[in-house]
Image (tube, rainbow, N blue to C red; front, side, top):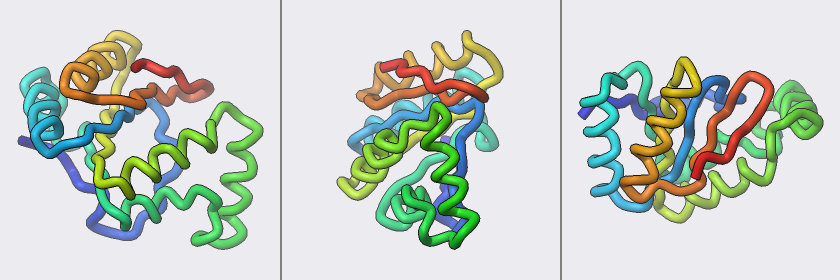
Length: 138
């Protein structure tokens, strides 16, 4: 099972361009989804997993933890397509013990395929984050 955990350092998570992100509730669902993603060619560099309170704080929904630049970044997102409520939802998923799976994709076919995999393994709040838009996939 190949994936990278983003809990290893204190990087600030910014807009996830060209990623499909979804939440799974159990370790069994997480393992099954990652196993299928790996089997379908999505390797360690493309699949990331976030979990726990540290990951929730990394989302830094308000930008306050990252000073003036962080607050400006989140302020600008509010006027674009970034749904700040979606960040709050993802934060609550993490604080509730769920896992966020983020997968780098190159095109619409891959985003649909990744979404199908996540949903088939209990994924919810599955969204594609494009350069200029966010698309709810499941």
